[in-house]
Length: 443
Image (cartoon, rainbow, N blue to C red; front, side, top):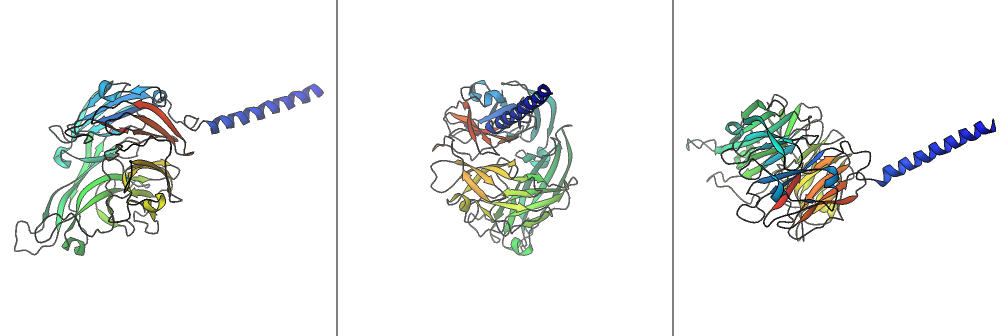
């Protein structure tokens, strides 16, 4: 009887010990712990080649794929400009990747093949096999389309464009001036069947008062699908023209930040919504700029603010700006005129921002808490005076891990793996550079 009791007691002790050690292992391994949803995922690194001047990225795009193990190994070197694969594009390719990292999507930017969508099978190293499926959207969205992949299980890409901005009386000067407008295109691309699922073209008016002053939508970019999956919210880049001469004005009093909301999947019924908190553009540049978060709301960065630097804005589940949500990155970081080059939602209300600011010695990375509205510059990254995230495209989120390529123009750098739950920073593989070039993303 005593022996049985001792056996039970010892069994309980060993089980408790196992639980304690299992818990410690989980807590002590923030980068590659059991939260990693796909340890076999390819990590594709992209680099932009110099065109005519260092850092312009206009010479094309090279890619190279490595395992997660190699990406995390600081003794491993990646030489994308020597060993990589040239992605089809006259200038910097506009890249997206599948959620499992096994497929790379590209729309060529400018040139003879501008607007051509292609899909590559990722096999590791420089082994990218272009699949025998293409579609060209140039006749609808120009040879320089702006596009983003929706977070819908790799089903859809949305390309947008504004063309032929003109005054209402351009062909008849006897008519009174009323507005400048272009023709907007919103196009849905089926990423699996590789075909144009549908598109709509229309003019998108502002208010009568705004248009009489010469304000108009110059560019659309960075579309995102709302939680209900029945609306697209599309970012805008605003412009003002002189009503009398048609000359584009470089300095003007900005309106509140505006987004265009359209029905999905019909792409119909465009509606403009306006923030009273932000006054900058929300089009981003070459990356995602709006994200549907776990709380069901959309968070959006601004650029080119009149004063006070970039902000994070909130669009609620009624598809309207929540003007009670005020998140100034200047205030949170304690600096002046923050400019968001690229940012990425990482889950659980956390995000990372790649940014610059007045009198900065480098571009930087910040860790954001969207609920607390706090931002902290990430320590542990080798910042450099030639680090420029202005053309950055791809921040990869895989579970709790966030992968960023950090290379100053013309200098070697590294992959950094950031843990969005703990804030931990790990230096990964070395990124070997060449004069005038820089790495622009991880996919």
